[in-house]
Image (tube, rainbow, N blue to C red; front, side, top):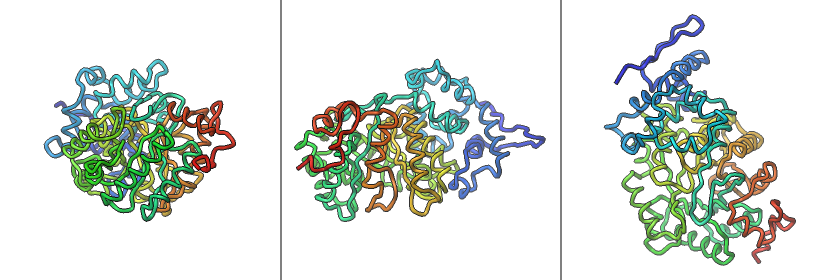
Length: 456
């Protein structure tokens, strides 16, 4: 392993960094989580100096310097042991700045990028993201189309989808279904009807899965169902015969953070195998993961690495399972990690780009908590930027207000409006269903849209 140059001169000041991990952290855009952890650059000049150093590091050198040692962490081992060496050898001698320029070239297609994606470690993905502007992240993310199939086909160009999230404070099935019917009448829910349960009980998980599947079958709705309980709870419900399309789990970027979630690669392997064998999905992409910048730090499992790099490591774990959905819950963890709208918007664009760059079907919960320095206008700004970047899906909540989780996200109306602005459509299977229900015609919602009495 050769020594990496970790110093530079800027405006008469010499900057010397001790490790590649420190360079990655200090090259990151300002994040309150990194500041709280004592990892951030002390000022803009030091941040620029770190970016200068990072720009000249090669992708091969980044592979040799994972932020968590191989012998200490199973995600590091997974990223290294599963690396596609043919793809890696094509890019290993590029510097991070050269890699950025290559991604953004007009002559480089999304498929060109996906061809080398299996040769990327999360540290490489994080590094190039740190050198990009917000517009760069939109351009790069828009190029890459990751198309997946569960019961319907997600990720096709010119389409944007949504997760229908009609949570209920007491898991009342009738209330969940009533909200779902309203959302469906606006054309949302083509990515998944995904419910966060208020309790982690097997019987509640079973009841919600059965109720959503019964509704889907009665009205021939071509989507997927999911209950966002702990993976072991869903596995027990599946053993009891629950009709489950997608298996869900929250994940983080280190073994420690995943232990806090009560999961490991071994357990996720078991859940994946069980869902393929016993689940009700018709396609091969049957997993749904959620993550978010700050997850590893909140579990004290960040190993002194910045939260963007730890986020990229969670995508390295996710891609093992070829997921149908991966979702950055970007503003949910709170202002301790992303303080205000500027940081939330930046993180949302970063996460979407990194997920796509690592070859996974990427969505975003464009959200904020009520104690963050953000409001609805900020949220709408990010929604438009993500739609421009070709995000696979966003959330869909009644009035954008989750009455069970107490946070703000995108609404039925927001998703409908984004389709109008960009001329986007839902998944092709769902579009056909909407036309049959009379709520979609000639690429637009009809006067019937938003009227749940179509289900009566």
